[in-house]
Image 1: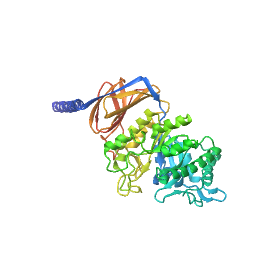
Image 2: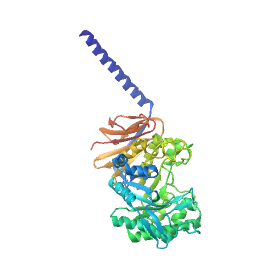
Image 3: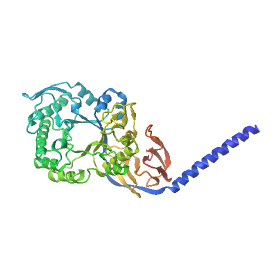
Length: 476
């Protein structure tokens, strides 16, 4: 018994020593880290939230998503609210008859996809028309004639084709509202070619008019709508658009630094440049001309559009998480409606866009149907932030730390983003008591990502080591 007592005493002493060592080292870490104060004032409402997240289906993941229930469940679990896809990937028009401007159609796959999107609680965003920059042509149904002068389909024929889509969904009683007309048309008109911009606008106008004649509730735009030449032409010709749409990848080079990528989340295409109004100025210009304050959809977004030498490995890592968290925060504070992640799932072994490395552009790994870190960020946002929530005034004492807070029901939420790979000790002012936290950081490898959860006291400092996104909540 004496020997057993000594063992128990020794074990207790060792536990006390280890615990004391951990506590002392933790406190030493807190003391060594730069102190940052994040303050929220729930009496000051900044705006009502209109933001929600979406994703694109393209390439291999479009058909995989349709046939794999695990992928659809992941999308549902994260509460994504919009899904964008290109019509030409499933082309239901198997033959176009130019003389009668009618087509032969097989809608089965499209209808299945639309129903699956609606079943997860999301809205479809369909892109009619894909300008193929490799072939330098607009992909069209077999049999559709091309005007040799413009290199585009004849507007009357394209309008009939677009109207057929709207008519089909109306007849099937499928709630499809959102459309973009031609993906990235700047590949056709080279940004500043005024004559070709006019040819594209002719095509846009004819299609939009026909689609609205079939269903006046459809919402139509172009992802070139923040470009000066395009928006000016739409306004001068009194052609209505229903939302501003644009593509905003952070950078276009694998050599870009972390800091360049991260900075772009809060600046890229938001401000004005030579050829582009940017989102804020475009909203202002359109509202001055029409009286309408357009909602904003970034219909493609990721950290880096480079892919010819393999995609950026940081897409699935913490840099990708920080970039996307800052994008979400920016959209919330500016009152933009939707950010669409390009794209849902990709594979290192089969991804066509990554011949020399990387895991494609996806937030889910198609090799095992497991999420990467950006998915977990959007799941945190999608399951805790809702349209109608009140965004409240929040400040940070450090440029390295961004924060945004909101109220959902009786629950206060605070998202803290450490956007520099340094150590910080975060003190929260404006919340009290016990807080639930959800944290994404390099403490767990990006190869086996998981969200860290637990409880903390609002009065205690939070030690962050490098890139971190943390959501803290009061109890309901």
